[in-house]
Amino acid sequence: MARKAGKAPKITKKSFKKDFAQLKVRIFLILNILTCASSVEKTFQLMRKTIFPIIGLMTFISVILNLPSAMENGKTDTLPTCMVMCSGGIQITFRISAICLYVEKIRQLINWFEGMEEDAFWASLGLSVEQRLRRTLHYLNIAIKYIALAFFFTLHLMLLKFYLSDILLFYVPLETRSYKFVGQYFILSTMSIFVFISETLLLVLGFFFVAIINIFLDAVKKLDESEFVGASEIPMKMYQKRHVELLTKLKALETIFSAIQTAQLATSFPMMISTFYFNLESIPNEIIYYIMSINIVVQFFTICLFGEFINSKTEKIFSALYLTRWYDMKKDNQMILMMMMRKSLEPFCLKAAGMYEINMKTFVSVTKLSFSFCAFLYALD
Image 1 (cartoon, rainbow, N blue to C red):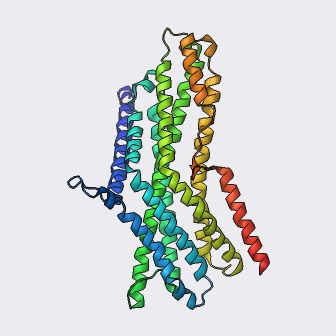
Image 2 (image 1 turned 90 degrees about the horizontal axis):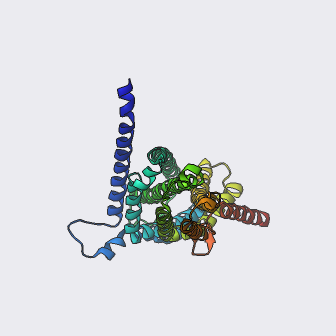
Image 3 (image 1 turned 90 degrees about the vertical axis):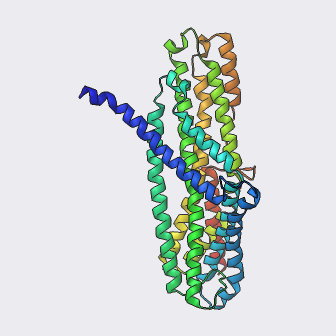
């Protein structure tokens, strides 16, 4: 029994490395597909990165071209659905463009996550880095499965609703109407896949960034232990190096998702208005539009919650540094600690368009504004 208990940590460690390696392979494969990357041919890289963003833009153009024909049928649920699809096409274009443009930064962040477990600095402090990362990966896989299930269910419910109601949202240059519905099936499926990919990347980066910030906070708490501070040498330079590295990676994250957050903030408002208002006014008995509303709100809630976590976790760094035994440290270590505190004085905030902070306050404000605007439109009728 003792021998089996002694081998357990090795099995856990190998299992985490294997699971993360599989996730990394899948992410890199998706990035290669989106950028049309090839290990053999290196020419026309910029042109290749624009292929899938152009496809996303074509979905938006297709909805606009089909709008006059769709409105001729006189269906009350055509207009809100077209507005949602137009906003969705814009959002997808920005999301895929950001991923293709900053694909190398995404790869660097994924490699950084992978090397975090093998960092000798964390091991020298006796931190359970492997356990925290493994727990993070476990909850990440659960979240991805639930999101995939929600997207799959909503997609097929929408397709069934549009087919039974004879609603065509996209301009498909085919004469037979049944073939047009087949084309609509592929367009909606492609849009759902694009959104799912960007949401998955957001979850991966968000989950592991929060985990790494927690690891750094655990390391800072070691500076409050009298035995650790009383040691002959405190690795304060390594602390500063890890702190600077964390801030640098957070800047890279902000660069990657700046366009995504801007598009999310700009398109969530009209999408919420479209679904909320027409649920109340025109189509109160259609379950599919309630499900669409929930998906839109949850999608916006996720990115705001991610920004809130980043903000709150980085805000704790300053407090954790101040609560250490800095008064028992040597002068040079105190100077390093003061520099870290100065850099941590303002918590890190993810921003849309470089101005609007992405947090739960933004989510509440946009949601309240959407409901208020819907109430205003409802009062005009």
